[in-house]
Length: 501
Image 1 (tube, rainbow, N blue to C red):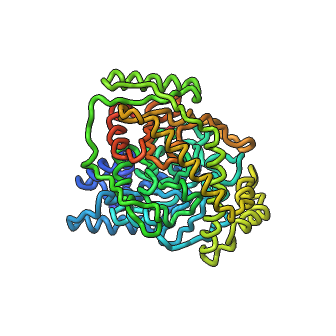
Image 2 (cartoon, helix red, strand yellow; image 1 turned 90 degrees about the vertical axis):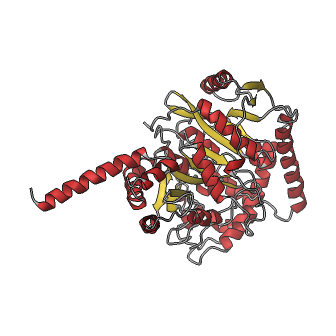
Image 3 (tube, rainbow, N blue to C red; image 1 turned 135 degrees about the vertical axis):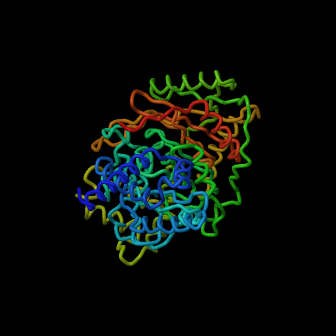
């Protein structure tokens, strides 16, 4: 055997070992331990994630693009580590971003639309700056429901003109749900240890639930939205998806903070030292009758497990009248979208020819064979028909719907007895249907989305081979309690989540 052949065999052996390790490494702690023990470095790990994306992505369409500088970023961090320096709590952690979050460099930020295929803003969103400063590696952009699933009432979650249909990580014939579909599927497939998604109502928590991962929809004002393509400033949030609750909380503690470009942001700070243990918890249990029968059975088992662990569970119901809530929400989203997307498009680079919502509608019509092969754009048309001069009507409806959602949540906690409220996040994923669109079976996202409270989903069970999640719904200003008690509940209910089949 020649020296060249021996060298090749050694290289293959090392690469296979690294590849096995990369598949085993999922959490931030595991990766950092591997770095410190010289098992693998950031460049090697990033290369293996890129290889894994190239192997699996054709079947799942979870990733739109890989960041060209990812390996360069990793080498810089490896050089720091060699000098005994650590960049921060996310040192060398590759992160995928939903493709409505802007980044410096050559990658466009598309919202899944071909109208924005040249939207190279060369700007880091606030959350991306925070990630970089903590030592994260920006690995690439994930697919999403086009325009954050705000184009058609008959859309298929996870479909975009840019990348096509994202498929569920556990069954490619089923929906990935929610507009942050690519981020959720990517984490479930271990294409990255961490991803960011965005949510207006359910777009972080729902895809996380049906793909069997952890996710947090933060409270309003905790995380800046500047540098992301807007749907509605009244409800938009950016939040983490990860393989563990601890990792999601770590990422959240990095990306939070006040931002002058987003006036909703506050000085709230998640400090891990403020999260305390408590035993037993008094847990409010919302009914599950609106979910599928099999989901109800999984929920009942979760409740029994929590009781067996010594916690006190109290059945509760929402007594408030929510009849106007969803209609009011829809009006607010239509109004916000027209107002805010017009402003966003107006300021896109000159290479983007679509400069208004009207332009976008015309673009889709002119390119309907590739932009609208499965469903139309009735939501965009309805939004464009909104009269933005009706500011008084807007303020009245916004005040009413926010008040209704806030009151419904505070009433659940009004007796001061409950520590936390739980519910099923959603039912299992349905079969993807490009003809009729989504077939949703209820979810628990709307109240916390509209009221602006923290909503966490934990992967806690399966209906056959399909994951279902448990929602932790925080009280107003109840972020710390939600984070603390979610960890306690997770310790009871967490199981070894099987790899996607």
